[in-house]
Amino acid sequence: MTDPVLRLESLSKRFSKDRPAIFEGIDLELRQGEYLAIMGESGVGKSTLLNLLAGLDTPDSGRVVLEGVDLATLDDDARTLLRRRAVGFVFQAFHVLPYLSVEQNVALPLDLLGVAEPERGRRTREMLSAVGIGALAQRHTKELSGGEVQRVAIARALVHRPRLVLADEPTGNLDTRSAAQTLALLRAQVKANAGAGILITHSRTAAETADRIVVLDAHGLRPLELT
Image (cartoon, rainbow, N blue to C red; front, side, top):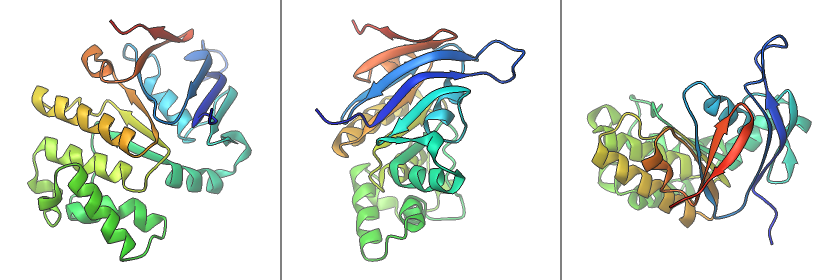
């Protein structure tokens, strides 16, 4: 059996010493090919947990181990490089750049990794085709629908073939049909890229597109059985 893509060991986080922990004692393993949904009420720390997984924040105790590397052992520059190479983000607010074309937006992670042409162009075009927006490559994102922009965001998150994809409420701004298409696309692309994925959501419908569901509260993570 291969080592986990991501491992959490007794992870805890609090905003200040005189306040209760947001959550504590979180243990989790995520292996290649797994797609996990994390549910929880507003304010329980879902986005905080995501920031810890990506090395954007540090836990008060416990460890985050990504691809066998304990993030706490890295300095800021090394964490940034690991995140740039191994993590892909899909945000609810998209965070695409309106002054760039669709193709330029999707190519950004490859630019940051120093991937040169023609490889950068080939991989960008392949990913745009995979998410069904190849014909929109030269359009600007301000000209696209919400569902199309979300496809841009997914393509950008996956184009560098990350080991871990983190999706934070990726369908919160979409209509029902676009949301369903986005969730199916995200799952399919995570599987196709042989990585692992985490979907943060408050929606049971969205969560049920994952392989398994866990619920986050102040005591940590607990499994939710699929029925």
